[in-house]
Amino acid sequence: MTDLSASSALPAAASAPLTHNTAIDDAMPRSGSIPTLAQLDLGQAMQVLAVRAPAHAPEWADWLAEIGFLPGEAVKILSRGLPGGDPLVVRIGQSTFALRRAEAACIQVQGPQGREATHD
Image (cartoon, rainbow, N blue to C red; front, top):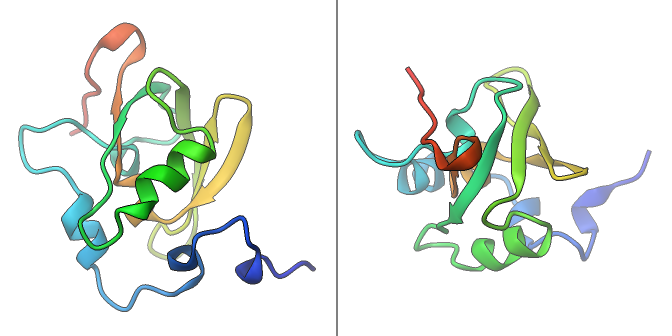
């Protein structure tokens, strides 16, 4: 089994455990705002609208763009980890990645052809 925590492909923040939910709270949209990847149902096909990194981790925007989270790209959640739904297995274009919910919460999404996602 390969240990990916020391991989240079991941930002330092990706290998460090979260000790609180500040990243999620900072990145989650407020009521009436644009939904994020973290809020989608499994298999719900969307497009990336924008990436908005939290103030405490501005480098996440560049890292997410480098791995393919660019406006207009097709995206969906394939599965969620148990317990707690972390990490998320995400398909972006033809690639598949595991993202923490805090990272997925940075990715604003819209429905295909620019329709806003609806989330109950």
